[in-house]
Length: 167
Length: 167
DNA sequence: CCCATATAGTTGCATAGCTAATCAATGGAG
DNA sequence: CTCCATTGATTAGCTATGCAACTATATGGG
Image (cartoon, rainbow over all chains, first blue to last red; front, side, top):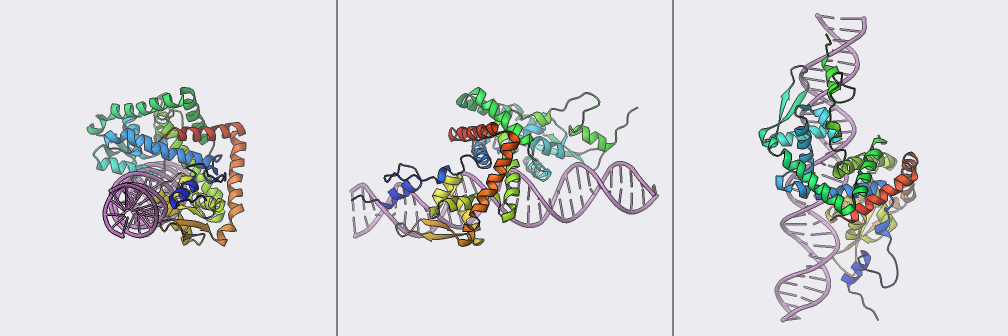
């Protein structure tokens, strides 16, 4: 008689090994064809990859992209930043708050319109500019190599295209 | 002489209209070829689309997918759920907490191993099963129609494949 | 000139995700 | 048989995000 220890049976349950009784557990495949599921799961994985890439700067991906956007166009407004990063204005406000606190960005109200404020990188941020772009470029290059250049570019283009058809 | 009102100039800034001085503002295109950027942005948009789809059930996408997973395999363990949904175990714990509080799931500890607990749908959850699957199916069908069947399936498959090559 | 409306930004509140640390039960090594 | 490493689950603390409501400013019609 075959006796299963609890540990062994739990490995069967989690589909890590083939089940001795030839029973196939489908749960892990359940959402395999779901756009939402696979995109959000991939996004979480990429979050981890880019976190690693920006770790030398002690910046999260969100902070790093905010900074890169402002470095590319110093003086941009919050609403422009939100649009550039495709996030809500409220989120942009908070992202800038954090980088102002870190001494990497500063706000200046515009002369023309008292409601607006422009966002500028500090000198400390300017010093990071090339490093940040390079870090992102390196991880991109690495993944292009691992996934195949065409695959990569095609996928990114499709993601952009699908997004442009959604609300 | 051309005088710009502040409102008008802010629309130029945000790239909503063509700039009269032929200056092109590149910021919104800056991350167009970035895998991280486009995937996370798309994920946020899809979050909105699926939120809408599950709104009739008063469930968030995360709750709905948790429920669907358990409904597909009643009695699954938390670690299995985490693997199925591709989230951290801690997140699975909290997702189940919420649905237990809503009266849709219940935990039962297993006889064999006192550390484990199995997750079961309640009767209330069973009543939602088909509705949830249909709701997700409908939004999938709609997007397939809008985006093209092949595009859709190809993209999802690539997302899965890219994910499987990442840590 | 003044008020109604629109807009830029902010704040409050909520969700979902992560990592790291912890708790509790199991099971194997000696 | 006892002790320790392992494992399933949970908790603590943090980040990023969104929506909705709010504040302050600007604009334009009467």
